[in-house]
Length: 126
Image 1 (cartoon, rainbow, N blue to C red):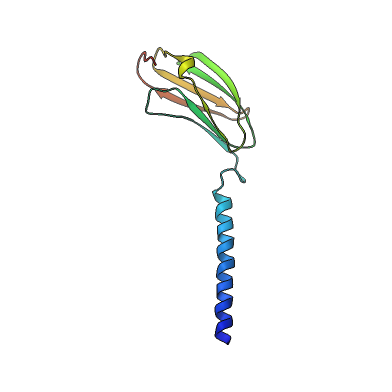
Image 2: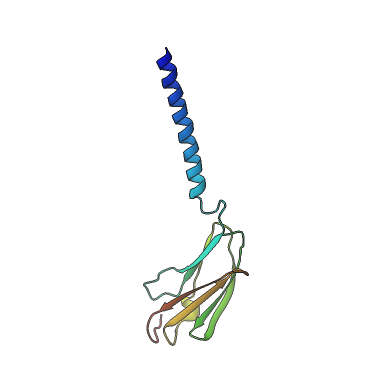
């Protein structure tokens, strides 16, 4: 009789421990819970595409971007991106020809600024 109680106690303890660990792991795996970060990246970094995405996991949602061809500003814009959302910015049709094959994207959320660069060669046209 005593051994049945010990076995039942161990099974209950195992189930409770497993449920707690599952809860903690799922909470820590969520990008939005207790986290504050955002990132900008090119959609196709190895192809001749200027399109980029902004992935937001922060409390801020107002982003501004500027596109430079070397030193000249080619385009600018703004996007409102909710927490947990990824927004793709399509530039291929807007920009067209980049004279020196270099593009620089600067994205700001008002307090933090991030830059990405892409070099593709001279005078490529889409």
